[in-house]
Each structure stands twice: as structure tokens, then as C-alpha cells.
Image (tube, rainbow, N blue to C red; front, side, top):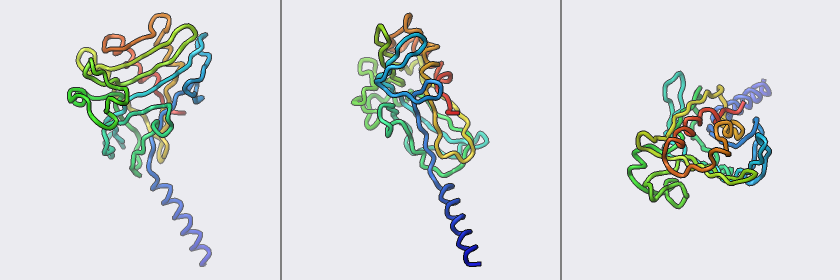
Length: 220
């Protein structure tokens, strides 16, 4: 009887420990579910692609259950840098169970209109256009076989707003929510022979931001 009670206690302990683990949101760069590394060269769509830098802002994270918001982090802005594993994930600091997560890729107009700020919004991070008085929402740089590419996607004033809201389903009780930026899908919407440089707000920046939903995906 004593042994049974001990086993039940141990089982309950581990069950509670698992349930009480905080959730983590993590981003990675992939091709067909295979994780890539920055500064390495990959054969893609008959071209050799070397991703050098991938940095972007995530803001206004909301965890939902049955379409109702049940948790929001205290911080509103997060800077993701896929060169650093510690800067490519967010501890959501909640043990609650939810079935979807929603957030913005980019910085809202309020923060942009406030000018340069501190913390992750500090211009020292290289994500602020001093001349434009606004933030870069998504920065992707690298090289192809014949030329370099730079995509600095920003803009918060109509008609060139590039902040986008994305929503992803979350499996029940999943502790690690993995979102993948698929390089192959990205270059299906970007033909480097026709476009290899976006450095200011405009139609091309808006068009590329419209495709976030197509190349930022949940890990299967």
C-alpha cells in the first residue's frame, strides 16, 4: 500500500511538473523542414543562396483559447535575430493551455510615431531608419550566385503599411511552438533576377509583407 502511494505521488509530481512548464515560441530558417544556418550556402531553385542576416520584430503577442485572449506577455515588442539561438525564441511565461497564438510581424504606428526608443527598439540594433523616422519590421540579407540581396521591409503610414497580423494553431499542451521561415517559399515570391533590393517603404515592401503568411509556417 505504501509503495502504491509513493508511485501515485511520483506520477502526480511529474504530471504537475509537465503541466506547469512555461510555453516557448521559437523561430528558425528552413528548407523543407530542414533547419538552415546563416552564412552557409545552399542550392535553391537553380541558384546558390547564402543567407547572412535575418532579423525581425514580433509584437502584440496574444494566446487564445476558443478565440478568446487568455494571455498576453508583459513586453509588447520582441526582436528576433536568427543568428543567435537565444534571440530567436520568446519565453511566453504562461502555463495556460491555449489553442492558437496571434502576433504582429512588425512595429505598430504608435511606436513608430514616438520616434527612436530604448531596449529592443534602440536604433543601435540596426532596425531603425533615422532618415525615415521609422522602424524596419523585417530585415533579410544575403548573397546569391551573382549578386547580393537586401530586403529591409518597413513602413507604417498608408498606403505603405507593412505590419501584418498572423495567427497559428497550437497543438494541445505543446510546450514548444516552432515557427519556420521557409527559404524556398520565400524565393517563390522573390525573383532575384528582377528584385534584389528593398530599402524603403513602398509598393514592393507591402507586396513582400503580404506574403509573410505564405513563408512563415508552423513546424509539422
